[in-house]
Structure formats: structure tokens, C-alpha cells
Length: 134
Image 1 (tube, helix red, strand yellow):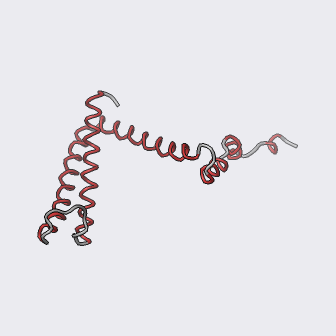
Image 2: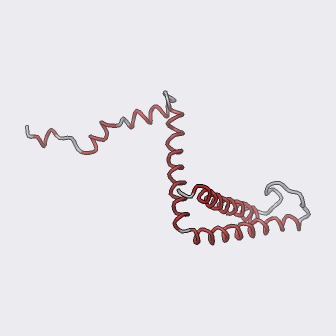
């Protein structure tokens, strides 16, 4: 037999290093550490996304400042448009979007989403200003 016949394909090497099937099986069946693994992986992904976002804000502060203002204004306009329609129907103190039409519910929710994105950018500016680094 030659040495080439004894070599495993590259994917076999990785398969031998990490028992992916066993890892996923432990997560599915609730084996030891399943909750830890299930929470750790998304947490690491979110932490890396936040780090990349903060770095981008520190590199292009003017672009993000203008974008922040635009998001806030468009979000507030969408939210206000949906709320004014509820006021016209006589619902002055409402919590949620139940008295609104389907179109206005969509505007209401998108308004909130845009305002929250604007708040996230504002928090990024505060973090960068307080720490001075990313």
C-alpha cells in the first residue's frame, strides 16, 4: 500500500478532531453542558458583532451620526403617523397597536424598531466616548 492510500481526506481530519455529531446530540438530548453550549455560541456571535459595530462607529463617526439622526426621525415619523390615526378614532390612551389598522400596526412596529436602532447607535457613541477605544 502506498502512503497516499493511507491518508485521510481533509474533512476526515476535522471530523476526528471535533465530534460534531456528539456535540449536537448532547444539545438535543440535554446532555451535560447542553444549556451552556446552547447559550455560549450565540453569545459569542453577538459579542463579536457588537465589537465589529463599535469599531465601525469609531472609524466613521460622521456617517453613523447622520444615520443615527435619520433613523430616529424616520422612526419617530412612522410611530407618530400610526399614533395620530389612533387619536383620530378617539383612542387617546392606548398601549400597543390593538386599536390600529393593519397598515398602521406595521408603521407602529417599524417606528419602534428604527427608534431602537437609533438608540443602539447612540449607546455606541457613548461607549466609545467614555472608553476612548474599542
